[in-house]
Every structure is written in C-alpha cells, then in structure tokens.
Image (tube, rainbow, N blue to C red; front, side, top):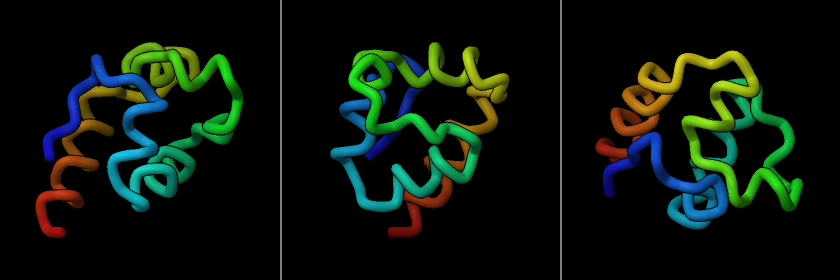
Length: 66
C-alpha cells in the first residue's frame, strides 16, 4: 500500500489502523469531522500547516514495514 497526497482523508483512515494515529500525531485532530473526510491529504496538510511531502514520506516508510 502506497499513500499519496491526492488521497482523501476518508480513504486513508480506512486503509490501516495506524493511519489515524499518524495523522493525529501530525496535528490533525479533526479526523471525525464530516468535511475532513472529503479533503485530500494535501488540502488537510495545508490547512494545518504541515509539510505534506514529509508526512507522506514518513507514513509510507512506517507502513512499508508492516
């Protein structure tokens, strides 16, 4: 499984049980918000001031070890 910044938050949280933890650890505490479910990871990172490329890289690195 490979994550990219175009994926929707709703898709990501369903992919693996670690993803919500990783997103919340990065500062995204609104995962349950209905509007967040339709945002891309890139959009959510922008809103929260998070470097999306860095987050995607870290998430893919962690998930690759699973």
